[in-house]
Length: 384
Image (cartoon, rainbow, N blue to C red; front, side, top):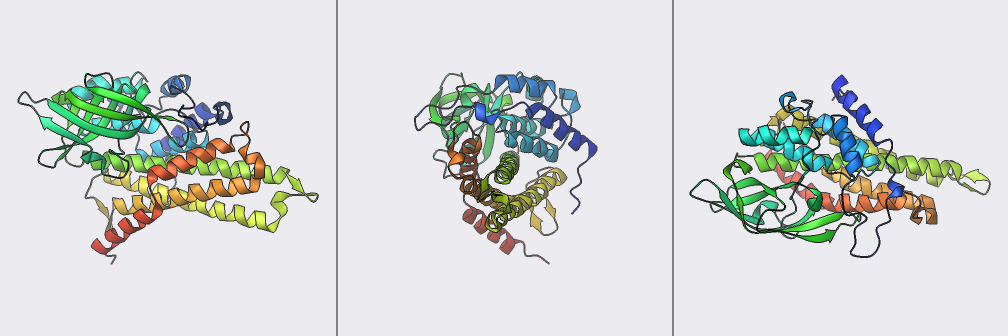
């Protein structure tokens, strides 16, 4: 498989690297053992800078002010965001925007997508369900009205950046079992947000909907729209995990090269070198499986039934999730071990990376569940 990136994809990566070069994770307060998040809002200056660099409309068509690039380019940018723990809903806004562009009402596309590209609209996605352990599409009920509008009732938990977003894109299930996507304004009548705090210390929310009205153009009824959105969110999360793991490995290499024991740098000890080498292998496996999944999304247009060979795209995403969840955890654990007590210092960024890595692992889910899903896909689509 040739994973050489195109000139346009490399340009997006370079632009992102330049934008994120000024972000310092160690300047964000440490997640305290309290109910308070590290900050009450997203990084607004960074969001404006991303808009100025044309990175918020990366996957949107040029007619809406976007760059017209594919999920691979988005994942390259998300990797750079993961390296600095960027506190912006770049993944959520990009995924919601692409879903609206692909499946949404023409009127909604014309009004919303240019605002996303200019950085004027901040979106998030509710994808955790009622408890975090069930299908998100079953957490909200959608009832169609005679005038074409919809009424939404239900609860979604752990919605990222909800208090800062202008709109939340969420799945809901109709009376006949069909899944639709609804774009809901967070200040609309019947919408309530209860504060939650993630493992990383970032602000989440429990979103409660009580008879919330959604107009017909705000609801996406196309088959496969929710599955496509979920795939992109998952693959993007793997990209953030890869960026985080790359940066943590760099921190570990720098520290062990300078820190001496018995008159020699830690990096020269065989036990240290072997642990670092194992984590490098993890990183390369995370990268290979991520780009395979991102390529499949780009090549198939995120179609639910599209195949390349014998296996559906969900198989590639399952493999990427396995390596991302396991790899990012092992990387930060080894980093903490090799840093010793210094890794817990609040004026050194490793503790922030550790907290984010745990949150990403929890978001992706346990590897055993993905392995089981992959086994079922292999049984249903045997390789030739």
